[in-house]
Length: 74
Image 1: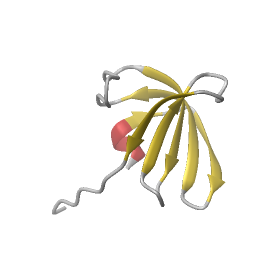
Image 2: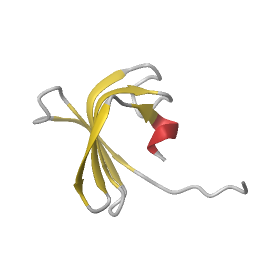
Image 3: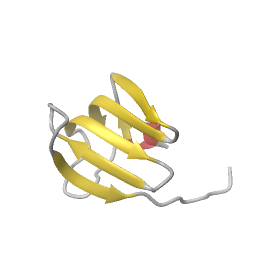
Image 4: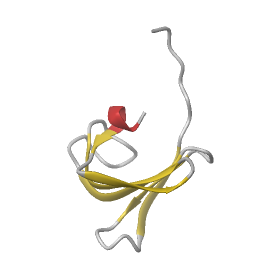
């Protein structure tokens, strides 16, 4: 799912279904952030359907989003 939303340089597995992606570039617009915007840290919690954007230090949430699933015929 994240490959459709942004690219990244590296990632860490935080816990089951939780990932932290670093040095990201958005492939599509998300909220007030346009495609091509660089985001230092994106946290994805798939179990709870949450995506957060963080500052470079990773200690301040810049934006919070809810994830939803869309299913299409392959």
